[in-house]
Image (tube, rainbow, N blue to C red):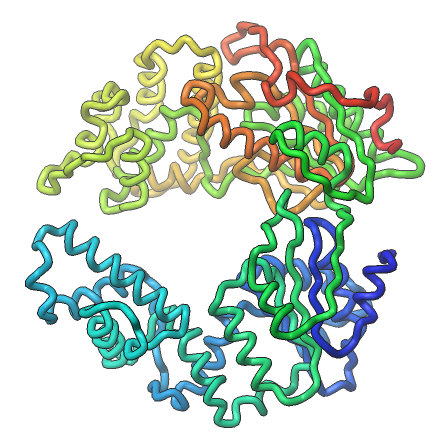
Length: 611
């Protein structure tokens, strides 16, 4: 990779404190990877540690280094530690727990349910219990309030004896800790709390940490007070000369605003500061379009001028042919060809893809189309409800889909009679989907022999909907569910509903291929070229968002903006003026509001890839 002068200066920087701030896509990860690469020597005794609030930035750096053919995996694993704050300090605590008065083989709980149970035992044996209403909700609210207070105290490293809260909180906090200790247990907030004590009290701990020659904190704009104070204590315990490097986002357009603990780092460690203001992850044309979309005026210097083009077609086949022809030209451009895995096609829902898939196959262009984690996915509300219904029939104790079904049906005041054997009917009753009760009545965990009849009954009893897009999603879901049921019949399971969820749905995945993506599949990876198709009112934004108002439209706009921001250089937006419905009708379409009033300053390019 060719580095800019400022990137090269960062790479060459040696011992001392260093703050790297950069806009999204400015090459921060590549610069860090190159720094790590240059100091890794088999003969060197010292090691490098990279800390982060989550594993995401660590995986990115690790991937870059792993793809370097000059670095062996053995050397990488020996010289570099990739870890989160929580994991690193948990390991330290488990090895030195006796130094802070904890037992060996200590157990860590992170379940809110487990913590609430322990706190409940404490409260029920405390005088405060008599003052709390015996109403279940009142007790739950009290426990939640105190558990949050305890968590906040531990994250700020405040023990019970130093709490400024009024009684009885300090007493409850102390008894909660004692109850944990009696169980040889700590909670997840205790990990950083006790690790901080361990480092401050030292007891020879610094000698175990002095082997690191470079300390990196990635995603520094996301660290909290606990993370920073631990980092500060850890560095204070290290006696040898080391490099301290913090890396974080600079610009709020795509990343996070820089109101964070990087400012404390500047005050406490006086680092040399480098600002990477030029992004490679987007282009001037993309920024201009996002400014138009969001009504902002954000200035973001970009390395690429880029290209953003909006096209309208008479029908979906014309649109698909254009997209595939453009991709073919990008793949075979003489001077600026683009690799297949650097191209993505986005759509609001999966039913926009069949004609595109057919054309990609005709052009012999490999593509990846990974559906969601569920083997059967849904777009229409009726099938979202049916999916949760089947899950509850298969396992009536499944809380997640019970809550999901109540949310879909907007049941906020539902009281379930556990003594009755009709959980699903109780939830569906007196909702807009109560017409489904008689249709699903024949289903049970062991018997779904009439499932095709259920699907047909859904179709024939579906309440009238004026929206063609409602029926468009329903018919496509119906076809997919019917095919899924036929696939599941090859399973010889006792529980046929279980086999319905086990049957493999079609997943197409070739390496080094064009990616077909929808909003629920949007990844952290950016692409050189992005095509966003089927941008019509009712499709993107979805017709349900149009009906539901401002907040729902804002969510659709966020989906669309996220897809646009995945383009590093080239972005092609398109809409067809007509769409053929599954039942044969051809309807007229209006362009999406997201593109209808935008006028690009440049003429559309005849040959994508020339810029």
